[in-house]
Image (cartoon, rainbow, N blue to C red; front, side, top):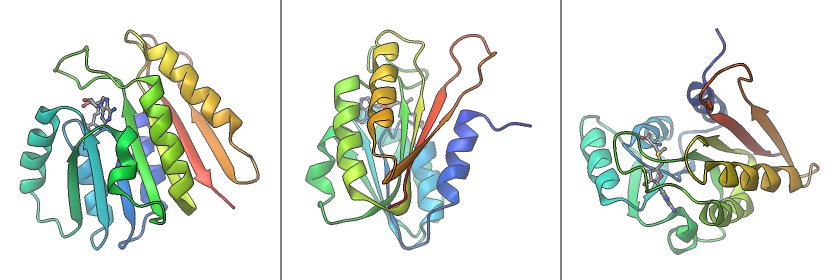
Length: 187
Ligand SMILES: C[S@@+](CC[C@H](N)C(=O)[O-])C[C@H]1O[C@@H](n2cnc3c(N)ncnc32)[C@H](O)[C@@H]1O
């Protein structure tokens, strides 16, 4: 069976990360991706971002149920401020974005095109050789199409000699199934 965008996002990251890597969860939410990343870099570092206090609380509860050895930093801040927490010379092996709103919470709190682009620019410049940024875009909500377009444009403009970009989408499903992008640094 073909993998959902969500499952495929994890496969793409698991393929490239090693135990000592530094990785980023750009949209922490309930912490499922943070947990996944922490389990895959047992001697590495995970930086996770969210603007909602609730996300940090839920994530801390989730992580506490596991014996994790990775260093996990939960930042109550927007991913557009990655600069504040990850120095320019730190190479990031993988980053994950789940764009949209947190299910079962305030649907007005959504990721936005401008801040997503700022974060993508910062991460692309820190991406390790062979590293991947995976973006899963839920775009059925208000402003979702604008953000999807911005991400598409950003990915299409990346120099093909330096990055290759995958676009993964089910094209015969109703209700705006999420679309996945994977940016891989090749040079
Ligand atoms: C689709 S949810 C993420 C789901 C999450 N990956 C999980 O495993 O539960 C999107 C999240 O992005 C957060 N968000 C919105 N704008 C943000 C920003 N500028 N920086 C970081 N997180 C942001 C929202 O608060 C929300 O929790």
